[in-house]
Image 1 (tube, rainbow, N blue to C red):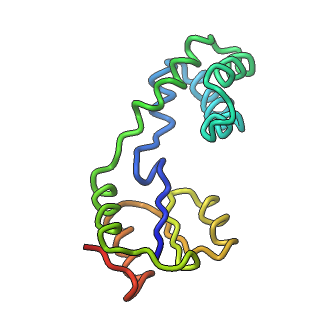
Image 2 (cartoon, rainbow, N blue to C red; image 1 turned 45 degrees about the vertical axis):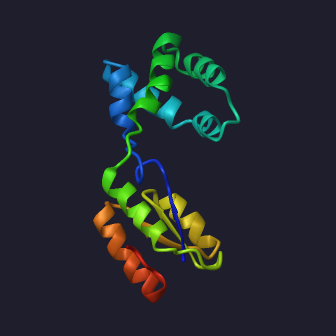
Length: 151
């Protein structure tokens, strides 16, 4: 079985409220920044690499009228906040060591976001809603049956 792990919220921490709170003290600015910067389609373009940091920052500052320096601080602080979850990394390594590479149709996608799971399911990919590494391992064992080896 192939296992695909999402990164943000599964392998690494993704806590946008905390990230925004570190950049903006004012509660109204926090709501605005979360909605119009992190929640905006520009964020996905930045994440995909189809928009530069400078362009995303300039567009976010213009769209929100927040100071460009504060928007830059927000955007640039994200990388430091993406800390790997040791239990999930351990699970990943054990799944890999188990040699779980069969046909592409035998794929399980692990994510913490329902919309991503629904999209994968539309392509016939089995999915697991990630809550924590312990539950994920249990579900992988149940879903994968005899084909799933975790060492």
